[in-house]
Length: 68
Image (cartoon, rainbow, N blue to C red; front, side):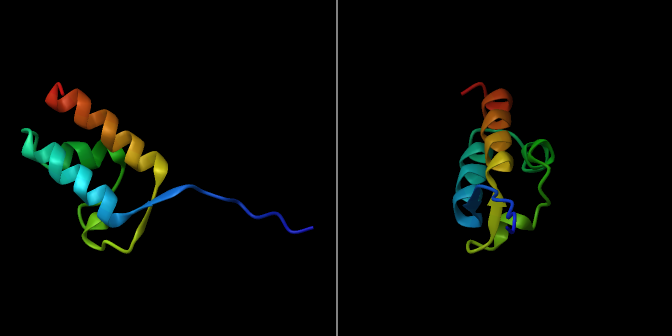
């Protein structure tokens, strides 16, 4: 039997939209990206797939950095 590792992902477009919303509330782009462990060019491709864990980290850091 072949074992396949399954990883939940989100689209680069979805990730990028959350990043842009977060940035619109105040913080620079780099701190949220660093907390999500994603490079600044990763959300540029809307068809790219990013780990759900990175999205969750971006969401959490957006809350922490904006107070929203």
